Amino acid sequence: MQKLKLDFPGSQGQLAGLLEQQNQTSKSMVLFAHCFTCGKDFIAASHISKALVEMGFAVFRFDFTGLGNSDGDFANTNFSSNVEDLVAAADFLQANYQAPSILIGHSLGGAAVLKAASQIPQAQAVVTIGAPADASHIKHLFQCELDSIDQHGEADVSLGGRPFKIKKQFIDDLSQHDISHISQLKKALLVMHSPVDDTVSINEAEKIYVAAKHPKSFVSLDYANHLLTHKKDAAYAAKLIAAWSEKFIESNQLDEPKRIDVSAGDVRVTEIDHQFKCDIQTATHQWIADEPIKVGGSDTGPDPYQHLLAGLGACTVMTLRMYANLKKIPMDNVIINLNHDREHGEDCQSCDEQYAKVDVIHRSIEFQGDLTQEQIDKLLVIADKCPVHRTLHNKIEVRTVLKD
Figure 1 (tube, one colour):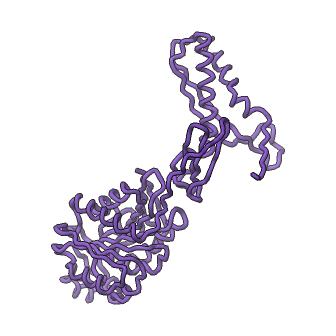
Figure 2 (tube, helix red, strand yellow):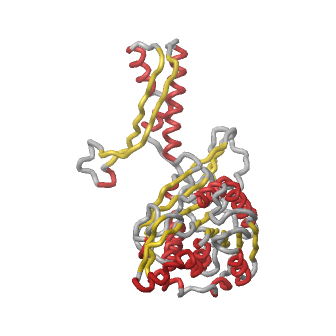
Figure 3 (tube, rainbow, N blue to C red):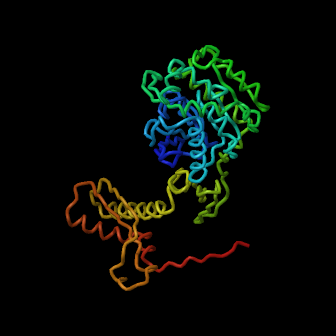
């Protein structure tokens, strides 16, 4: 499983996110909104995300402003800023990775994804888990402090055993939201709720379900608690989400390329995902080339320059082994490390910038075995005589034609 820690601009500063996916093209991108004051690393978010990734989804979760590793002051946030953070996260994913197809929200995060969905047109499905229909529902968590907040403009409240400062602007913002937007969702909706949830009543799930239009579904989480702290409950929810979403989500996961006839000595390269992923086939082998995630690829295979280095490294090893065996040199093993760079050429001090740098391949060779210095020196000479090495040093002409 790949885990990428990513920062992106939110409503009030940089937000800390985590992208998780398998080392393959994912079915769909999921944007996960955590529960009120919980953070992206809360146990439910972590367990559900991991289970979805294992089933082929990519999942992005992040800390809302003022929580976890994100910038900002929680006291200055509100439900509206949470919605803005969600939209910012979706925009970030679309610009740098893949637009989210599924929005999942836990508790107040569920209310947030319902509100943000209209601003994330690429999303095709929305899932709420233990969510209130109306964001103002959470006022019951600090009901005793409401008078103090109204009188003094703010108050320190305890939520989940942790102190938080709630300002009057937070309360005022909640009153600006209702459930009218749910009927305008225009996306498939899955409502998940436990009948024994003692934090957010299952009546809230009923309100969401009644307000929404089809396609919509409801699934009971049976005996799960509100925070889904039991791993089996989170895994169960993830399995249901994965199965349900298949009806509504256009999968981005493509079938593996089929084997085709390739003439001996030829290499055939075909694109797979209209990004960077390529299928490579020879007469007897098939493999993948790709680019790293940071440049827009899926990192499902070596990039082109790594293939180039691999060709030189493999040829060098084979040539050294042939020579060592022929000359009965006791070389037990040979290990080669290579990397590619572009350096300023010593003979290009006055060259145009376009030609001022030359490609340099650094090749480090380690010999293992009881070798004399004379044998090592000879092997180093032989390394420069491998066929691929010679090809790279020869004048190369690439002739490109349009296939008939």
